[in-house]
Image (tube, rainbow, N blue to C red; front, side):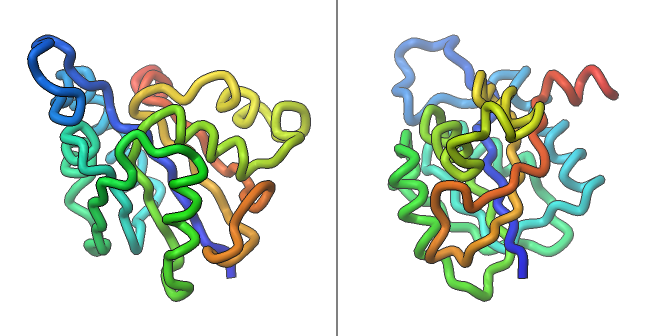
Length: 177
């Protein structure tokens, strides 16, 4: 059975008030619009996770809230371990997901998300991974979503275990709609 993984970088955050600590930064108006666009795209394509792993940072929590309502509410696990997590740390968390879970949405931060995405598509991604993989190798902007079909159970995912099936950015969604 194929499992699905979505990696969503939080939407654009506000830097208007330099006194606000990084962990507490809210979304900007642009970020709110981007999260709403991602929500519409996910709804239209029937992308509903069984489990959401989300950083405790305000900007990731705000992004997740704007993805609601879900057709069927997922289990949500907000964890400090995802705050500015490395690819290795995110992978460690994913390997602990129970096998009955068919789909996971990770809402987190860069550079960890982009590094994990590139690890999943494998070493030849920039050459053989297609246009989306080449774009992803260059940038994983705020509000972007990468979708993977996984060829291994959660406990064994690693390098080359994911086929990148979609990579979409808020800018593309705005241009299309």
